[in-house]
Amino acid sequence: MKIFKSVPILFLSILFFAGCESSIENQNLRASAVSVNGDDIVFRVYPENSSGDIMTGSLVTVTNSENEVLLLEFDNDSQCYISSFDGLESDIYNIKVISAAYKEAACIQIPHLRLTKAPTIVSFSDSMGNSVLSGKSINSQSAVSCAWNSLGNGIVYQVNIKTVLSRIWTGSTSACNIEIPKGTLTAGKTYYLYLTAQKICGDPYFSLPYYSFSSITSSAVTFYVEE
Image (cartoon, rainbow, N blue to C red; front, top):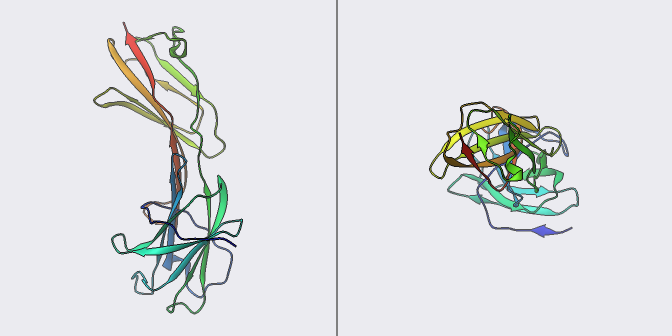
């Protein structure tokens, strides 16, 4: 069994029940797991007592499916236990909290899908057939469609179009294509399209006791719009 103790990084994770019995109700234990652009998964765990206060003297660990164990340290600034894990692309992580305030160890399972490869744009053209991928400019009076490869089930894709100075348009979809409405883009300008894939579970505001988030953004696709 390997034991890792890594430098704390700020971010989030997701949870589900299982692993061991707990004498407390699980709403007293919250956790999050976050990974961005294929980097390490950052875990944050919030063990609370019956008054809702974070317990600073707890032993908090995260274990992956290969029995590698990560020890989380308490961070005074964020008031939670934090550390990062170079985990598998898809795994279920077992969070365990041992505290004098609990009669038994509190355990939660957190599934996390770490996105490591950005989606690839496979077509990007206007309704007149001008393809950005072929080096052509987009017509400002045409609707524009963009499509990309799938990264799997449950992925949400966000398309952002920007100029050098500002964001012009944003659209989100669970499909692998999107249409940019006619009239969105102004002739005579250069634009940059970014495609971000996201896998989200739980709630970042903890109306549920867990949050799991992973995202990855493609490099920019540069294109010009003409009359």
